Image (cartoon, rainbow, N blue to C red):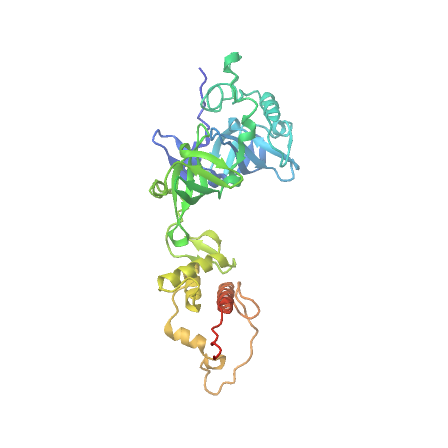
Length: 395
């Protein structure tokens, strides 16, 4: 009987990065592991940049290392067979191999697909049982094991051989894919939750909603019928309602529904609970401005300046302007300050904010102005496209 050694399993990372299943297996957040250092037995080899998973079984087959200048021009793949403990404080995932062993492993060029021929050479080099021979998730076992079992019976040579390698996909590439429910598109792939012992992806983290209404839910990979790489879409048997009511995803980063705030040092970047959630784009601003117009009983083509300004305040977390402040901003520059009697004042150098241009206009203000100009242009085009009324010629 082959035993799976869990003493040095990276499951400890799950304490801060994942959830727990009903059978007490820990689930790791794939996204939380990106960027972790990879520590060989005799020194660091780089950092973790991607995962390759089998889209037929959802098993993580390889971790992809970014080795920097150490091994340039080649992919360095690490099987879960090699993984040891995870030092979460230092963000280091330990690998049970030496740098020399990794350096002399079968080479594959960067951006080249992983072929079955390469996998055979790879597994033979390390002396591990292959995952495509046998009925288990990892061939001879449900977990990645390092000891070679007795020579497999010919009947154990699964039909997986020859086609499994073409099903390896990048988690980075698939992140952001659309989720197509049984009754239409609903949400996007935000993260993957992987079993810390079997290294099988059990849950997709699906983001639904938009901005203030967005939240994340967990959708079992068992409900995914197929993945279309041409359409960048995952198709699930669940309905929109079922996805909406799926268990909510709770992780340390908790991007809740709290007001957003801007970071003046990062132009146009929105923050929620000090976690960056993306750039405030014109498209996001336009969508919210249209929503506000509809809420106020106007057509979506009738977006006002006030709608644009309110949309930006909501997206950036800026407070509502005080009436007095608004009046002061609208007043001429010469009337905005009350000089001390008898003082002539003096000119000082302009001190622009981190996101202000030479005219003193912030990134948010530029977006609003562009949106207002764009709306005015659209309204002019619509007006010019209407046929002009003509009076009938007198008989």
